Amino acid sequence: MFNKEKLKIFMKEYGDSNKNLAASIGMTPSNFSTIWNGRQQFQKKHMILIAVRYDLTPQDVWEIFLQDDVESLKKERLK
Image (cartoon, rainbow, N blue to C red; front, side):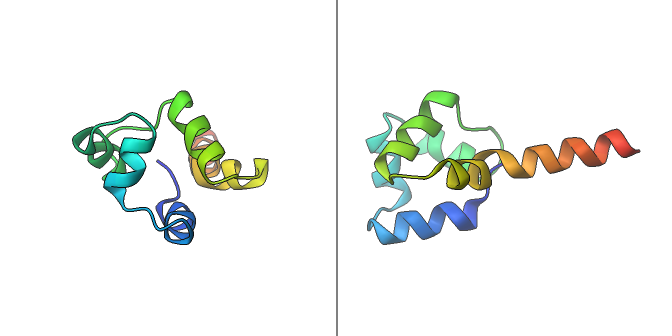
C-alpha cells in the first residue's frame, strides 16, 4: 500500500487529478484506480515517474511508497 494522503498533497500542488496523473505516467485511469483503491501496488517505473513529475525527495518517496509496507513487515515479524 502507499500513503495516499501524502501523494494527494503533491497532486493538489500540481493541479493533478487521478486521471491526469495516470496519463502522465502512461497508465489507464482504470489501472490507476485499481492501485488507488489498494488492489495493486505501483510498479517501480511508476514510482520513478511520479517522483520525477513532482520533484520528490528521497524522503518523500520513502514516505509515500515504502514506509507503510516496511512497517507492516516489521509488525509481521514480531508476531
